[in-house]
Length: 233
Image (tube, rainbow, N blue to C red; front, side, top):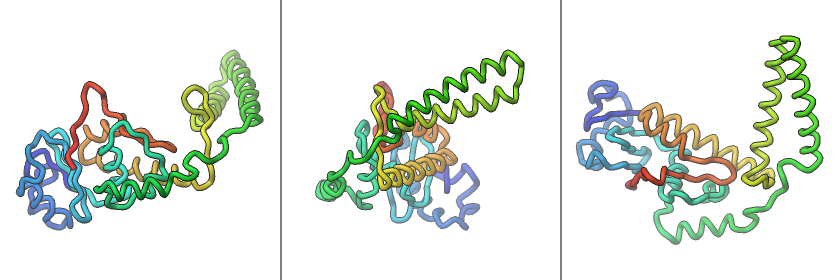
């Protein structure tokens, strides 16, 4: 990983200092060759086994990963929701309409198939448990029992997280199946790891992506409507 705010490798030393990195020759070529100019452009370009990224004048050269490819798919089509199975099925090169159509056809059947993450009985049990915990919390506060308060709050938070993952907007049940859940977990993990790597090189872009990338069974990139980013690919 190489980052810079100028057309040199000055963020972590001179070009000579980075000569041991396999990305160094590529970084020098890209930066000196003008691929990433003008400086104000936001760029997300794949060059062989590396991605060249520029944002707000800073540059990062990152080793290619699935997560970076997923991010590129989302950035190319802001606002669109991609089902995780669609992201997994898309070929490495979806630059042509035919490739994208072929990928979409592979995931059309059964796209919304699955069963609710939580059935009605599980919801009732969660509700009863939450009521019990609230009573326990009230009692712990009356008796000034900090340890019990912490335990109860931790369990309440765990239940809240589980419910959030099972219920979507408007209280609609989210559905899943074993293969869809595996796809969601794999894609989410790859995207979050890629955002973390980008953030280590370009903190401002890391913050931007963390705030504007939505993951789950459907993933999307939702830039601020008043401050859209014109990405170049």
